[in-house]
Length: 159
Image (tube, rainbow, N blue to C red):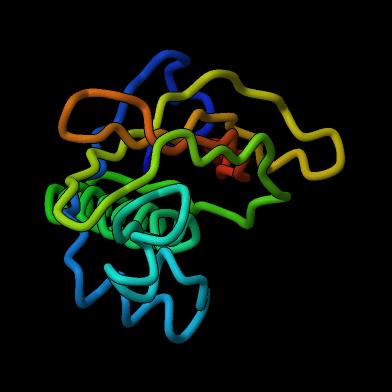
């Protein structure tokens, strides 16, 4: 999404990358941020409805952010190397409809994507527009595991 607001295409899908959730990382994240039994150990998880160790939903969301930022930086670096003007990305006024649809077990690999679903011109900030997107992660079986709807300010093309 380094394109200026006017150049963003509704329906465009951006592949953000994949990530495999490893046992030690799941536990380390859970110990710091989400210490529930099904995130802390195989033994603890075996006694819960999940039955085995799974990643915190916040861990899956954090990986989304890591991959999204890395992909945008990569795209920006490529554009700048070709002397192509790059739009600034502003803050996000928020997100909605966050869903952890399928558990992410140790060893699962998620593929993260962003699909542009709409654009809105900003009335309060005419030099910016709002880009609306569906953020998703699919597991190695192609099943939707994680999703949310995001909005972010994107710079408009200078006049």
